[in-house]
Length: 568
Ligand code: C2E
Ligand code: CA
Ligand code: CA
Image (cartoon, rainbow, N blue to C red; front, side, top):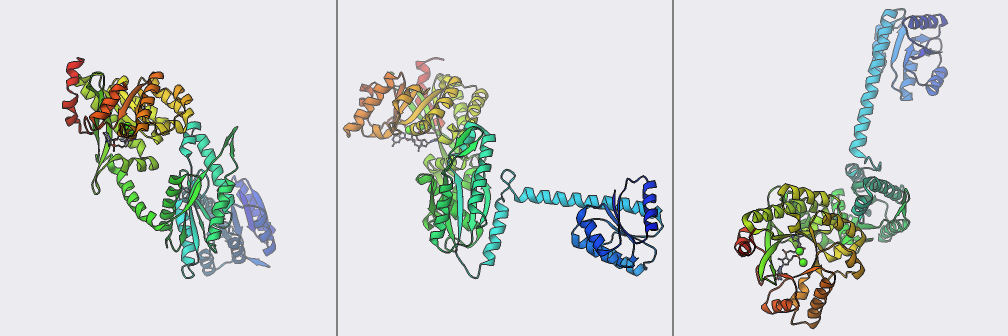
């Protein structure tokens, strides 16, 4: 026990030491009896307890207590004196002394020390726990940066300080481009390491000139108060973009990270921190939509679009659990036999406020927000369950096509989802066709080859959707583990009226044959288009000519004849 004894009498000090020692206490002891001595002792070491005489020739317990308080240390302070009046003792206790023991009464002193040591330990533990909770609540564990809540508090403080002057300030919303891909390809440990480095680099950019926070997985916000003019707002954005020109090194890998940044300006684009954040974020989405790796300023019209977007996003989060999504099916016809052989599942949303919404109205949003993972899983499960029940009605081997978005394809969990759905529904994998848009497949052909290969290994078919619009490289096309080319409806639409489109269709069919792929034309609306496709020996078609996408019970009479043709 480290005991600091404030005592002028050496005899009393000796007595104290021997009493403490005989109570089995292992002592680390120092005696002081002056202001300077006490001050030095507090500065030089840590003490578990201060035991102080009351009045000494050149020092007193009250002065000692004052010194201890000034040091900011929480050390039990026990007055051990024979000549202090009750009144003084009480006032000393009010002032922060922890106990008062009559000098010589060791039977009371020792328990008092022990009790006060325990109290002090409890106080420390509580303080630590509080600090820890504060840290957890306000700081991001990975990067050590403030979280959104602390950011909002800090920025709120700055804004209220400046409310009168209304001097300009800028909010930047920063999002890493394609971060999910890094996570998916290299794993979360690498993703985390990258986030940490990105945070560090942003910290260097911001320095003392603003407030930086991590406001989401790969999203950061910066608020800068002292901006004199719009030039300065832009200079900072340029500076950030430039500083990301250098790669990040993680283990032996180099990563180039680009950013999409949205900017909005106080007070024009918002007067409070949450409006500023929302508007900067919507400007960020514009940057992302345009070409990534750039920054965009908030424009008002964007705000209106974004409040609808926000309303949609909020309701989309609940759409699956509320059962607002449903699937329609568009039949697919085999041109050789003229019979229906399958269907494509197309999702729709019965929105409680906006009415019936087609996928173009919400799938892009689902992609951006990651909600597509959940929605995609629901669609897949629903479609496979439906197909399996048709099979059970004797319609085997009718095919079911399900659309898979870019974001889904980028997630390795897609493999688990598909395996899971197949085992839960018992659908024959050979009857499942996953449709992936050509541009998505080609955007990262190397990664696609791996992912599609893994899917194909499960026995399912891969279809390249909207083929002809995505600039496929022929060399990749040969390597890709795919089964079906789906000619985009824009080419089908112009058959007959546009010589180019007709020759593109002819070329795609020939290409498919040469690669040993099945070819399907979508968007067939007229008998002329059908005739042309038949002549070109296109394998399958779908389109309004046969049927629009319909509810399952409306599809049944169309596909039922399959049963006679192909008894299961
Ligand atoms: P897509 O895969 O190219 O789907 C074909 C779209 O063309 C469907 O629009 C369909 O209703 C429409 N269509 C079919 N036949 C004809 C025709 O003869 N003429 C015309 N003019 N249009 C025809 P829809 O249902 O609005 O779907 C739009 C897109 O949304 C789909 O394009 C697909 O990319 C996406 N999508 C639909 N369902 C899902 C889904 O469950 N998941 C994902 N990720 N995307 C989906
Ligand atoms: Ca499709
Ligand atoms: Ca398509």
